[in-house]
Amino acid sequence: MKVLGISALYHDSAAALCVDGEIAAAAQEERFTRVKHDPSFPVNAIRYCLEYGNTQAIHLDAVVYYDNPLITLDRLVTNIRDLKYDNQIILETSFDTMFNKKLNVRSFAYDTLGCLGKDDKFLVTKHHIAHAASAFYPSPFDRAAIVTTDGVGEWATTTIGYGDGNEIKLLKEIRYPHSLGLLYSAFTYFCGFKVNSGDYKFMGLAPYGEPKYVNVIKEKIIDIKKDGSYQLNMDYFDFHRNTVMTNDNFDRLFNGPPRKLESEIKKREMDIAASAQSVLEEVLMLLVANAKKITGEKNLVMAGGVALNCVANGKILKSGLFDNIWIQPASGDAGGALGCALFASHAYFKYPREVKERDNQKCSYLGPSFSNGEIGDFLDSVKARYEYHESKSALYKKTAEYLAGAKIVGYFNGRMEFGPRALGARSILADPRNPQTQSRLNLKIKFRESFRPFAPSVLVEKAEDCFDLSCESPYMLLVANIKKDRREPFVLADYITGETIDMLPIVNQVRSDIPAVTHVDYSARIQTVNKQDSPDYYNLISAFEDRTGCPVLVNTSFNVRGEPIVCTPKDAWLCFMRTDMDVLVMENYLLLKEKQPVFKELTDWRRQYELD
Image (cartoon, rainbow, N blue to C red; front, top):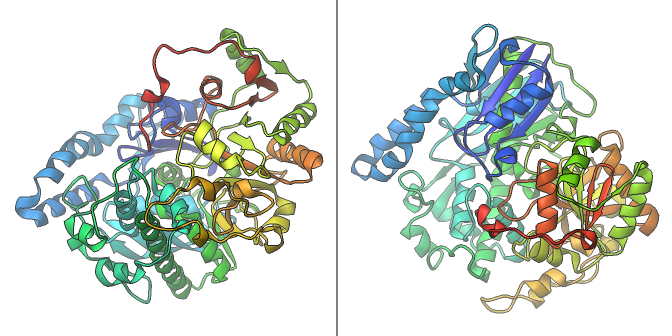
């Protein structure tokens, strides 16, 4: 049985192929078009999935879309009706996308594929069913409570349900415009970051601030009930009528207009971030507690864009409410392609579900890979100078030597990750012991704000030696603290005086013996690396530990700000040559920047990418 899942026409379009209930391939369209968060119909991702699955469209049992356009139309029409004479902007901005695209998604699929499978079967799921399916079916649980939270899908913004074998049932729902995802996005927007791409920055900014606005938010903006249900006060928002998230009432509540993009970040934004994060965590804790109460399950799975908030996830784990939790690595809209394909396979076609001890996500290594032959042909075409290592063991020892010598390494190996996190297939790596690593990576290689933290990749058996983490975290979706015996004295308040704050000295201050991955609150967004799931990456970290005694590497995504994570050897080589990266490793090839020929481009490459 072969089912193709598609998410498209919102943001983060993607395709996924399931064969006999197993995930065969999945990829986001942005990785092929090089347009961040590309919402277009995923022609390239579909082509990749079919090629990887060695199949053709005519052999598909069904094509499935992750959202019901007719229910979404109902929300749009109801919203326009309720706005009465204040609906012109939302009508103008939504008409073309709704009527010329979303309602014609079946035609898009047919035109792309040439047919809709052997039985001409085109299915749609509800948006939050797709999220729920993406969380439950790949999880290592036969039964689990399910919580999904995002901006909006059709009408739903938050759901609670359960999964049991092949069955998924949603029991409770919160509806638009009341949305935890849109609330967080509103604060993200107000603090001068882009919605749908700046939420990670906003989360990373929170530890710099004090949660001094929590009471204001709870008194004026969101009414939170004991069961985790909530209602927004729409007097403070404009997202339901406009292209901006907040209005003048919101400005007055927080003592001024929104921060302008790329302007200086001040203490107000830090305190708002800390406060919004605190409120988000409070609501999520109440929601998962209610999910526990009404389902009685011991396991929890989560998806939806809010499930990418790894700080909140870490606190849910630490609460002990559930014995185990599992979070879909591609929790946003891209993961909907995977969810709808799995739902069709197991719930519609009733294909038996196989539960595996670890999970069925395959470490999210679901994208394209490239052979040494393909990589070598490309490198020769650009006259690159390289070393080829027959032995990967020798290659990793040499790479570890460069890392220990403060070199920044671009690492390109195996199948590309599905989801927003680089997990050791398309990663930039560095030595976490070097206190200059964080600022250098941010300013000279990623070309982004200096305050943004980096994640540690740690050998799974050494994780508890470094972090307060009692379980695996293979998808970099849990935050935990650095062990106390590894910390250095640091008082954030000593650096924050007045409204304007120089953040670089804070970033460069040593807070532990692995300072490059230690945030200002001693936290870290952890990836545990298991030899079974990621043998090559595990062996590289092991080689670094053999040389230095440190079982941790800094891991950040292989891209610059505004650019999608690299997909092909060409993408990786361009990123390497355009930045201050020192070393590039692609499968068995190793390149040193200092040995490369002069690299010139006729145009400024930074103009290709819109800043996130």
